[in-house]
Image (cartoon, rainbow, N blue to C red; front, top):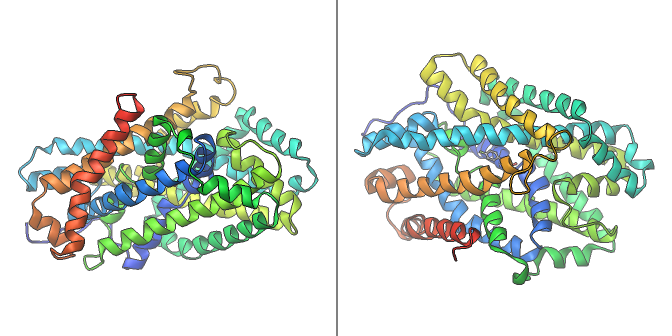
Length: 453
Ligand code: PFF
């Protein structure tokens, strides 16, 4: 196939716009909410180093593969996989890789929207000055009482899902490209200020030590898998989000440079979130392993104590909301692109239909914190199961198949043409990593987690 495909959905205005959008997808609740709480649950430094290893050896090479496939296929992940497979003389059954991504996208968005709803609630809480007067215990109680209130959780979940649908309906370029450009740097600056505040507390040294000193004895097979899953989750890999964004990437943009930039920015934000949060955990004698509520109890304490905490707190949760928003749209985009391509439904209707599916699935997550909290499978609630199955199983499995397809099945000529790196050392290193290191790494970690190794 020599003639280049065109996407019917349009294209990013520049390479920079793609970097912004993909970074917007990558940087989200995964960095600021999930990374710190997993680090706390899985014992600190060893988890962090394992995570960074996964980003470098699995995440970046697979991100390059996903962008490459997307740009070559220039359609929704389902149709991209089908066309590329056909082009290589393979079964069009590869489209099911795209389907798995669409399903994973719905499942992730369903619980993501609930957590983004907590963020929304906290904008109001911070804005009304509630953290200024509350004691540490009262701040914990604000979070617990939110979780006990299904009506409030539903309202926020609904509001967030509506925000997501609206942006996807408008088309990714118009609203989003513009908003992301200044919101992401603002989030970064505010996070820097938070790290600055954390440095002024007497828990800073202990926090840094906890975050970077690897106590390998604390890292279980389960912890390895969680680090791998988090690398996929945080970089938005394995489900077609980056693939569909790649399908709107101009032909002349370098896939390697953009992928490395996005991954570094994402990792930096996660580390900064860790540096902002763990010193507070130690300074105020909180629990590192307190689970998904971690940032919603630690950060408000800081906002209650720091000068101008009401303004910073409100600003912080607003920016976190935007970070979540720029991620959630990428969770919906693969399904929407497919509905537009195959069902001929308008973008706006497609977004509404897809959003509704994710919203319904999210009701289970809302209830798992209150009415359904005793319904458990392997001791996990509905919410826990959604989170676990998507990030620890579906995303790494998707990534594994993407690596196999790109590095083993696609013709070398097509890969070289699309990557534009020539055939030199960088290309060969990438190929080696995607052929051997990434897939074998994923398989070993899977086997380790189920107790086989
Ligand atoms: N990367 C996002 C975050 O870290 O919050 C979450 C996410 C977005 C995961 C898109 C997967 C995805 F496809």
